[in-house]
Image (cartoon, rainbow, N blue to C red):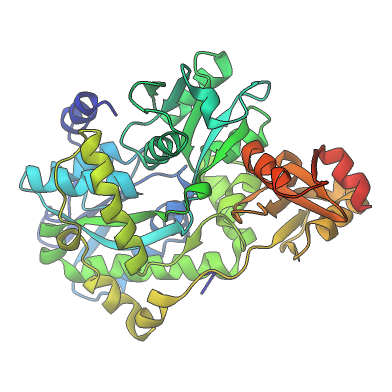
Length: 447
């Protein structure tokens, strides 16, 4: 096992989408269609979406049921969790994957419309919150969250990234509803707004911050892991579907476990597969899903993640995106328990190993791991154009970031990377003699 929107507009989105696809309740008596909603570019859901689909694991598990039924899987790709919820509550999607805030909205809408849903497993998670990042334009003069006062910030309201933005602004002493102008936009629209200058910052979930940084179109302003609150994505299923076809749901969760094992055992190959299927650069996929990536994958519904979900309810209520949500009633891990068998209890307490830097050299099927940033930089300086990507964990939060996009600090003989300038400055302020240096300077010092 690997280490270890405005309320009215959200409601409109959730109720106005047209029906599409079939459901597992449909069929001609011998053929059943199972409809799965996923987010191909939200790469920490790949074990329940893109990678799972590419490997064909779900179809294989369904064929192995031997119940005389012919199963078809209808894979439906969306940019965010809101339309998946809309289709689920309309009875058009059976299984979906989305982030923690959308999961709560999924639960609330299901209950409200008498179409209850259940959280049945987890995909990717980060115990500190590193799956969400706030970025600015490369030439922006903004260097801290306080600088966002009076500025326009693009996010997808009701998403996990919106939750990070709200909490981060509150901790910085800003009122998210008054001190910034939030633009409710899909991730791709927000990225375009940032590039055009109509948004001063962008708060988004994976893989958008890493993608924009990799492309040189953004730089990190705030690392979500500074909140030190777990963020995760999970799998939700309609309750009526789960009761009607429990064997099908268990087959999905067994397939998810297979995809998770493949990702853990073959992280580079998995990144390449996801990149080919989504059009995302493999280097960006690996940043999140690699051997020491920002996301840890495990289907088990850990108590710490459930606890974090409960903390999210009050924030969503304050934003008038949901009312009360009974999280304990929403969580139903009995299907994944059966799918994972004896390993489930151990998985509940498993934790990720220490963060480490990695270098992916061109043509290599594996990465090289480094426990010291200096050693990694020395390797990069010696291999030059042969390096495909280099990743370093933030010295404070452990969040992995591209080495050439990190903020570097020299502290005596130590070279330390940080995702965001504010955390780098905080370190310098607490360590006499330490100072921020350029990446080029860090490479020269290391070599």
